[in-house]
Image (cartoon, rainbow, N blue to C red; front, top):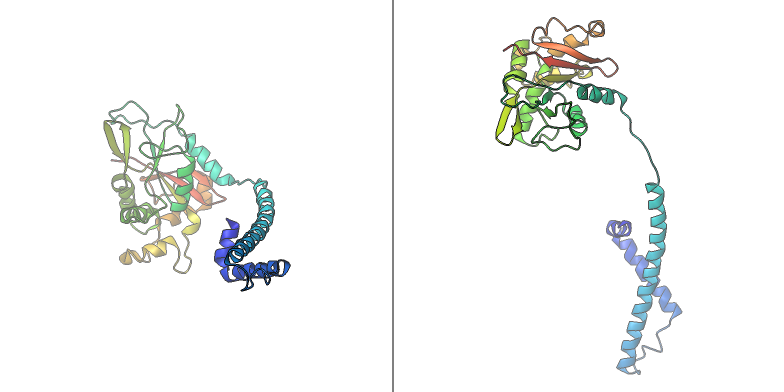
Length: 284
């Protein structure tokens, strides 16, 4: 494969090399006497095939030599064993998996429901791969008997128009809208279809909103609140909702900012990365 890519990348050099090999073999096996015009046509054809075999053999041996070195390099690369660690993300994943089973009296099924998570696309992509998903979403993780599955309000692949719209809604905590409007979005608009069993499917709102506070401060037009100013031009200049989560002392005490009450409750704080998980209170 590597040789094929090399030939495609620099075909002229490889053809020149082939002709050079051909000329060298021609010096080793002279053809003047064999290709004389006075010799029979049968002998000329035999000479042609003989030299064709010689050229092909030399080329095959040359490629085999290169392939041998290439296999050694591949074995050397395959023997390298590394590890990846994201301690803060692992803590967040373990926290979600430690949640009790979710149950609601309104459901027609006695089985546990799914926790619905909303938040930044990059982080949700990691959680989507590491948390057991609820039906009908495929997952590499298996839901144990004492835990609920997880579903997500938005997906990191937002090529679809609806996914892009849902992603804007999921980032509402970074906007400058009134807290009630943002809460209403998570509670009544940004919902997920969950299959309870083969004959029953219900729609549930977001339970948790993950906020990355380091993307909240102004960065010369690139922060999330400033991007929302392009959509909500009439709200430009007002404080963003995520700014209330930048009070370190308040978060250390495990308290919820008054600007978010009674709609949201701080349930998880990670000071090193600036991640905060808000629980969407069920007021109505």
